[in-house]
Image 1 (tube, rainbow, N blue to C red):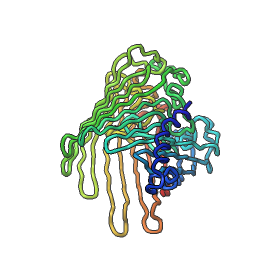
Image 2 (image 1 turned 45 degrees about the horizontal axis):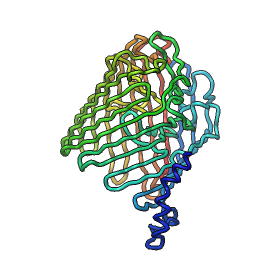
Image 3 (image 1 turned 180 degrees about the horizontal axis):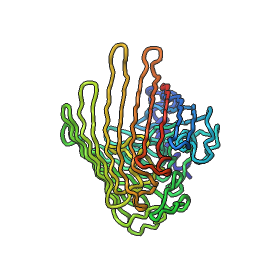
Length: 439
């Protein structure tokens, strides 16, 4: 049935190519494919984690890459396909106990013992685009604050459905995506919306009992509507609406004002249940949840500093982690606000960019975060404790004969502010070394 639908969509291309083949090299259906382009990357990712409690130590090295092909455009139509593959070149035992909870995310978290069968058809889409409209159908990714590729492992989040972007005028754009299948980051297969919820950690319910809602959630689609407005230079407004079928509805609004050297950003998310919601096994909030985030940033020529504050109030912020990674101003690698209520996250970020003759395209980012969480079961889905985390990231792009190669080093260090054994498990030091060769 899906193949038949794709054939119907391709009929205009067949008709156009037969009527115009020979007029120019870009109007023949044969050259629609022959004049296409390809790109991709090879990636090696080494990760090792040392737990301060003496447990949870692990290491893993993943090797793989992605190869994508795009046809030439005919009357705005274009086909795209991309495959991605990964191999577990070496690792500790990722299927035993608590060890490797981070390292297993380099492969397939649903099959931690698998080392070679880790490929995925990442993209397969038909796109139509002109100066105002962009319509895409098939497998693709898109970038919004709650649903996005978040390509921080070997495989990003990818979505299947229909997407539309319409440029109403120069300062205003509308976007809509109807998603019925998702392949979460760190997995290899596409599944329906409800079947994906619970692939990751299910956490605990409001009474402290272990949650078990995987394969028990009924939901058929996610509908995301977005609006982007830039009424004047340096002022940007974004609104995103996430309708999770039979689960909840989320309204996200951001306001950003930029000056010559300063920028100020505010983000607000309101989450409420839908009428007739039937998935209390996953979404057990009885009142609306609110997320408020603010950031102030100062920019100089080669470096910048930012301070941010995030809080959740009114009820637990619950959004399936299998759908994307939250991208708030205060977001930091290895920390999420999802699953929490009555939480306060205070952060700072410093960035330095080197562009000298001997040291080109080196970026250093330092991030510090203090998170204070509630110890009430109903506010703390994942039993996390007060913590401090410091991240140091260095990203270097090579030149000359090594052009296209990029290396990234991420060092994450987390300290629990509580002394009990349960919270000691949360403390760790982690090294991530990623090498990309882009082409």
